[in-house]
View: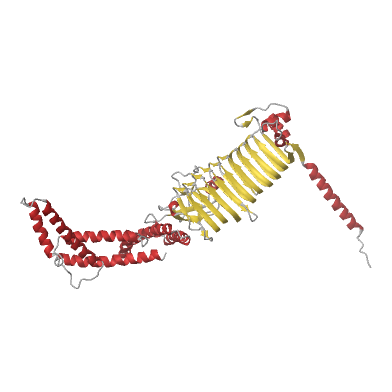
Length: 581
């Protein structure tokens, strides 16, 4: 058996390498400074500097733990007890000359940053079990490369611009917080839940989140989104000769398979300017319930199990052209969607920070434009104007969103909702047929336009047989009144007798008025009944052998027969359509 002998120089090299590794670890360990959170606050309170920087620190939160003492009433009281000093505060938080705090490479099991009033807070690279921002007022916040093993909690706070970049949380929760500037998450990973309650977003929000795991939720309830004030125009050749303004009020760009996506009782306000709520992702369950939606709501999502879209107050538009519903138990009603609220949209650009058709965006506009648009630009289509019907591709996509909703209601057995969806879809097509005739003319275009108009009037495009019956009765009665004044083979004697009875009634004689009145009424009723019988016979085209009238009435009878045949054919088709629904 032979043993490999390591040369002396190699042994020396291995020893030096091991020694350098040990020294590096020791230096790194010595470079991490351990501080108590109360010490940090003491420095913030007493410092005359406008900016404090902490690098490679481990902070132990001794204030929050102390607050668990029954004798400590709140955070400030706990901090005063630890520091043995009075702390000056106002409505903005702790009074301090420090306006900016920068933290790099922070380690902590749990830390709660509270009651600070800063122009800027930066936390770059850190690891926590729990991280809390409570009752802080910060003009600009940047949190980057931070990992929170438990919950990252924000509550009762006010922010201007807020940024999270490349963070990784298990849970993220936001309560009763105002974001008066733009709110942006970029490449943030969440493996459990993301909840936002009772908060306000003043200048739009961009949620770009990667959800990990098999059971995760995004839940947003009771929040308010204000209209975006910024209005930077973008020149896009081929889209519009004039610069256009694009606004994305909220963009939910979710990666991974999200278990539940809920928007409940939120308010998306919009002024006269067009704004979008854009949702991207793949969800098992999606609920859009009891929201006020004044903006354009555009879900480009796939829902594998169930979509609930209920009791929303919508004054903007709903864009379902890219919505894919794979489940069969979706819960929605046409009452929330009807009234020509549906629209379609196309994405004109997804990188506004890049050149668009040869137009270079000025560098100073890139950042504010990114906030305003969340990096996307849309144009909407509603089929309301003649210009809309010039784009055949957009029109077909628009109609397909109606048809897919119609199929959803039909699969659910919601006959009334399906019929109402179909009627509005056909109304849009009727406008297109009118545009075709007005633009291109032609007998065929005219017939299609007028025929569809008749179908709308008579049976609501075959969805309402009872309307056809009411109109048919009205037609029969109108023709009956006409026939009443013309003699027929069935009614020759009664017409003459009716005239004689009328003369007897209007003359004063020994018979009085009562007996002539009843005789006149009976004759009138008999004559009207004969006229109605003639009208009904003509309308249902039962056939006469010979037409039992002459003169103008004979030709009117023929016309009525054609009208009756045509309308009854439509009625029959409408009835069968509803019976076999």
